[in-house]
Structure formats: C-alpha cells, structure tokens
Image 1 (cartoon, rainbow, N blue to C red):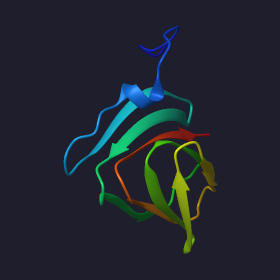
Image 2 (image 1 turned 180 degrees about the horizontal axis):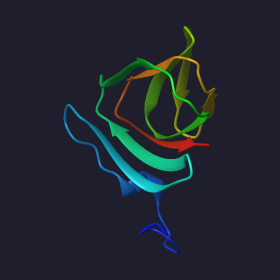
Image 3 (image 1 turned 90 degrees about the vertical axis):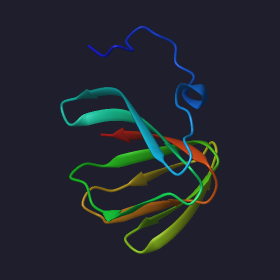
Image 4 (image 1 turned 135 degrees about the vertical axis):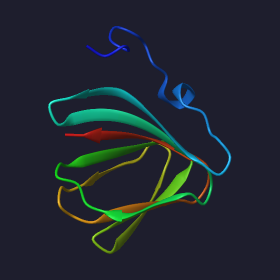
Length: 104
C-alpha cells in the first residue's frame, strides 16, 4: 500500500519547483500502473522516447509543449492528453509547470 493511502493530497501544492531542474514524486506504483507528479523549471525538457503502456498527462500548473509522434500539442493548467503506448513522445516546459502522469 502506498504511503499516501487514505490521505488528501492537493496536487498543485504537493510538489515544488527547483531551479534548472525536473522534480518527480511517485504517489503510487503497482502492476504496471502508476501516478507520478512532476515539476519542471521553465525550459527543461524530456527527450523523445516511447513507453510500453498508455500514459495520461494532466497539467496542474503552467504550460508545456508535448510532442507525440511528431505532432505538437500545447497544454496548460487543467488540460489532459493521452500519450498512446509505443508512440514516441517528449516535452518541453514553456513556463514553470507541474503535471500528474498516470501510467495505465
């Protein structure tokens, strides 16, 4: 069981920004599924890669550019996008931003 079971979590306040960094905090991970929070300082990026499972990204704060199979998507706070398994994807922080990543 996760250390965060039966606890109320405010996603926006649960992870902090760090200068020139990407910060991650795993909330739960089990049986090929997980929930991980990330915070990105402006300009930080993750190079294109693919994953063996679908991944749903929910933007909690700020703005990000996500590229999936060469198509660019600009997302801001409150928006979500599904990154299909096996498709190359990467991202770049347009501003400081936070996201929840659900691997399903």
